[in-house]
Amino acid sequence: EVLALFLRPARSPAFLGPTLLKTLNAVGMRFGDMNIYHHFGAGELRAEQPLFSLANMFEPGQFDPDAMEDFQTAGLAMFIQFPAPLDGPVAFELFLNTAQRLAEALDADLQSEPNKALDSATIENMRLVAARHSDPRR
Image (cartoon, rainbow, N blue to C red):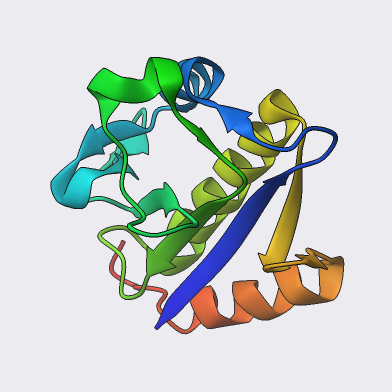
């Protein structure tokens, strides 16, 4: 099962590469496989495999860290796949928190699908999906 969130610029036409790069690093996202950014957890809650990832919303969906100076995009897609390397609810809360921090830092609208604002009912539904992947042994 995959859950996704989308970030769109709130008051400008695009996210600019240098700001994006700085902000992604600040929230713990690391460039890696598939030329996209990944999050491996925080503090004691770290995993060998990515907990969730972030891609450009527009084709080809990738990033080139060496070309971020001239890069811009009108949208980002974050996604988490279950089962996750950590307990489902824990991984989801980290995913949601990181998305919210990115939205605030980038002055972005957080959406549950392109052009649909994320609301509390959707967050609760996502939490239910994550809860199905809770590992009682963790």
